[in-house]
Length: 275
Image (cartoon, rainbow, N blue to C red; front, side, top):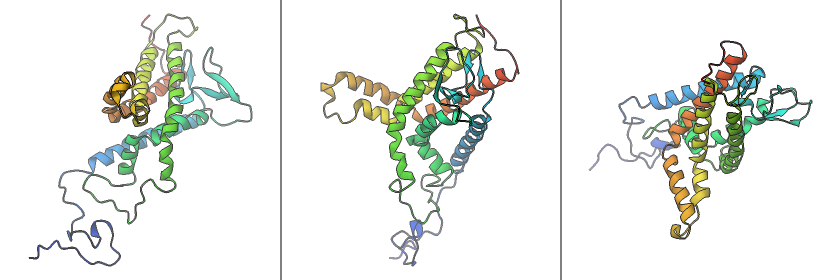
């Protein structure tokens, strides 16, 4: 008995209209506002891209003692501002004339771009691949992450190691934030609190990474023989369950820390001191 959904034999059709698929005229049967999630994701990521691009190429207003913007730390060029006891590592000489942020942002940016959650976010938000569950993507062909350039997503685990080093440097910056503008220790300002929240979220996001979970407890046949790694795997697993929320929270916090340093640098206000 014909049901009206028998496979069609449309020549050259693919995806939901392929010859082996049911002949349903509609591209999807969802009736709610399914597009809100990918649209809001794209808007959020686009806002961060615009802001971070502006700040990365500005090459100014990224240091106000004792705070250094996380976008510029560590500072690897000779044209960096002098930061007393700060992350000034002049690995690149005077020949580097561009913003020093471009030397370091590639590592946290690469870590986030290849992150499993961010892949889902921008695949849906920008590439519509697919835009939502049960909504067909508009592309005629899809090779996944098996070809260039998406095959480069597989280097995520290596960016994870770089992200650990960057998080370590930002932790050092947070410790230095407990000084005053004269570099005297034992002081705490609003910036110190912002940096403290930021580094906590960055570590939580970094350690909640799927690669971290695999490194800690992957390829073990018997957890009972590795109690320490099993316990660590359990802790990372709990963080991993909140990986998406931590990704957004740390993205907002790192931008907020940079913007706070920018406001101090341009003289918008003085850093409020608690003690």
